[in-house]
Length: 68
Image 1 (spheres, one colour):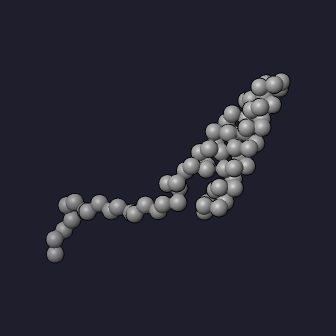
Image 2 (cartoon, rainbow, N blue to C red; image 1 turned 45 degrees about the vertical axis):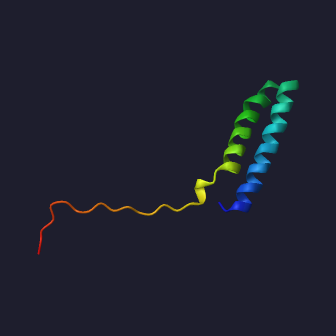
Image 3 (cartoon, rainbow, N blue to C red; image 1 turned 180 degrees about the horizontal axis):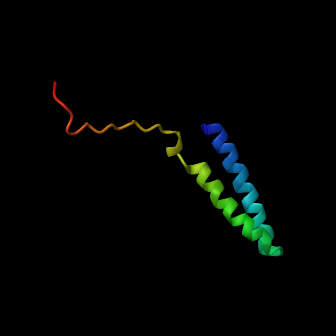
């Protein structure tokens, strides 16, 4: 995910999670069950910076190979 799509997705998830959490606090308890996890996932999506980094492949040297 690039930065723009991660930001848009994170903000939408945070807004939806916050809305459901507020609704859950004032009445429908089921909304709390959905609202809090969506809020946490939205925060994770928004602030996860390590997803865009590409790790280098580390190779191990061969042990016990034949010497020519």
